[in-house]
Image 1: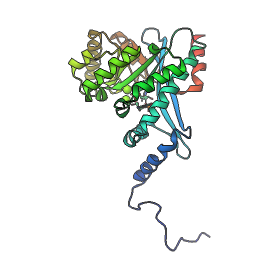
Image 2 (image 1 turned 30 degrees about the vertical axis):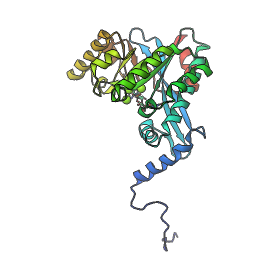
Image 3 (image 1 turned 45 degrees about the vertical axis):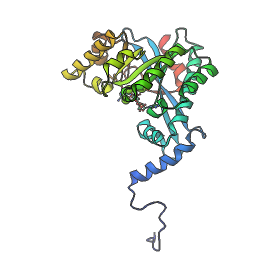
Image 4 (image 1 turned 135 degrees about the vertical axis):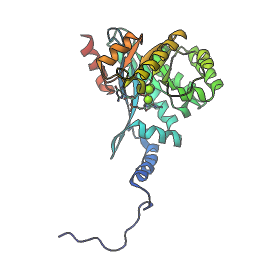
Length: 279
Ligand code: C2E
Ligand code: MG
Ligand code: MG
Ligand code: MG
């Protein structure tokens, strides 16, 4: 029979910490080794044309294969990495990895495919960012027009002069530039007009109920007309149904991203996914 545990117990961590605080603390520590131990992975989600669903490219989405916790979601570790500064190294790793994978796809795919990489707020403020981007392009040979950088509306609007300078620098390098999660922040339209952007990404919170919620449809429509009047194209994210796709296409949205066309997949699966669609 099992004996009840008696005697003193050693507190390995603050006993008053909730399980959630404990795991957050632990993730915080483990993040420092994630890059060096090769625990980060890039997953790729397809982005297709609204008309005809032709593949245009992929968004690179970071995953962390934690040795004991398994796959940790970026919603959980990106804010921590942003907090402890590791995001700068992780982001540099991601730029390199995404460019390298994109060059691989091109070996078997005839039309140029673009790869979109997310930049965090802290990365965006890092003075080495432009150098990290240039290094990723130089070392992989990816043509700059096939690399798209995504910054959220919140990041873009925090320090608009900095954003303007950096985006101009990226544009001069030949990159494509997108505003992510558009509609969730507060944009200065005067700056939006001055930023040398290519794409607005409609946030998935407006897409989810677009078929049934009139307000969401109105907002998505307003984003599409704003983008077009500024000479930008629009991609909708979080598209899960054929009805959402059809509606967005009818509204003039150029590209679609979402589970309907493909979930984020490990790099090893992209080549197979591409060939299964084009043959
Ligand atoms: P995001 O950049 O807006 O990426 C889109 C998110 O929506 C991804 O979540 C994607 O898996 C999810 N998604 C795409 N289609 C659908 C759909 O049809 N239905 C639903 N329910 N979800 C869909 P994920 O991969 O969990 O990433 C979450 C966020 O974490 C990203 O949002 C981005 O802000 C951040 N993130 C991911 N990778 C990186 C990275 O390498 N660097 C930085 N700085 N942030 C990253
Ligand atoms: Mg994104
Ligand atoms: Mg987004
Ligand atoms: Mg998002």
